[in-house]
Length: 509
Image (cartoon, rainbow, N blue to C red; front, side):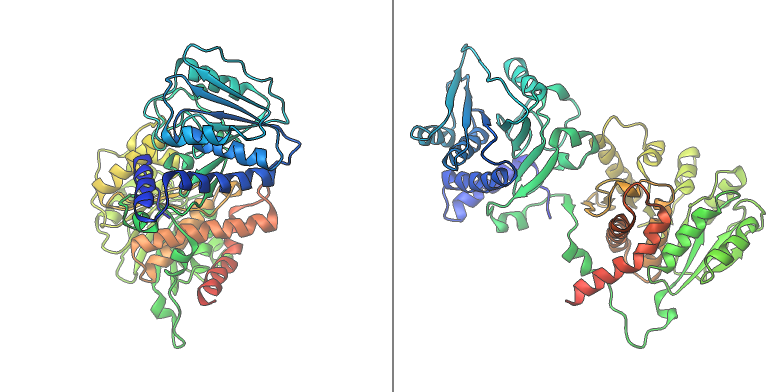
């Protein structure tokens, strides 16, 4: 699913009107009908609907919703803000259509007019149609006061397309109190990029897509670096196994992980790797973790490092098809030397996670050339140790894109809506996963999955998208079994077989 800019969404509307034999007002009617259906399915006629409309097409949508709700028997009060005495053509048409509608009250606030808001109760529902995605500057003065008043009320708020005052992409310089804090946002056709950022969650609330038949031709042709992965796309990446397959056909991976007291990270990563289809796995770990790995992961080969407690000596890569470095590795100075020596001479697909990333940040004066298409899997703090502090998710994503392009690597920026960033700067957001996965070891599990896919010959891009999807899907299965609070990383590993099975069964259905 593509994520278009607000400018592109406006173009998409115009293209649909020009090429799909539908007028702009009828397209608005279609959107309003779909949104009215959603609203009425959530709140019955015992709730008063207070519709707050602006002078543009977003206001036109809200007025059309007001009419349709009134026709369904709701008590509807409308406040139309027309402070410039200039309504859009579609908004004006919907004002005319309201004349014979059984509204409880209709108030038009003109320039210099006195604004008298109804007393809002907890049982009321506010329909926010002040400003849509075409907004070009932050709200201020009177409109900012309106937004603050609505936000302070006990009523629930439904925003039409986007919360008023919010921008579709970058909200870095906006005054948050002057943006509607919606409980539900009904986004037309496609999501906005800003919906996927953590700091905007309280602004957007729950969001739903409303399909109004925007031109598929336009969407298909639209050039955007942002997409959300879809199940059908991910299923198509999974490779079927030949009846005469043997372990040699599915790669031999090397996992360099673990240090004294951090052997569990190596275990989790190894178990996830073996649950993700690899033919053979060797875990290179300090001597202190030898018995732990042999007992916990008997299917893996264990290669002892020269040091008792930490990684101290790079190893020959000839037997392997891919290597992952980092889970529980530690940051000893000797480990740093071995790490940089290992990646300097690396010529096979590579995953860098956890302490491998911390070592890159700590020794920022050392800029090793790792293989093109190397995968980095930072969480937010690990990324910022490399690129510097970021004030918000938008800035962080931009810096991660710059890093991916500069280093010609893939970056998996972990979190809700994990972002998979390519060396070309394209971003695919992952829809699977849940807050129960915010637990120690979850990232180690992902590293094991990625190593398994690279060893089997998947490209770095396909490995990232497939790996994060399955990782999140396993987390969703674990949540069904254990609940979010009780989940551990080990539960994600245990759910991997079902996740892979679900993908394969859907692929073959």
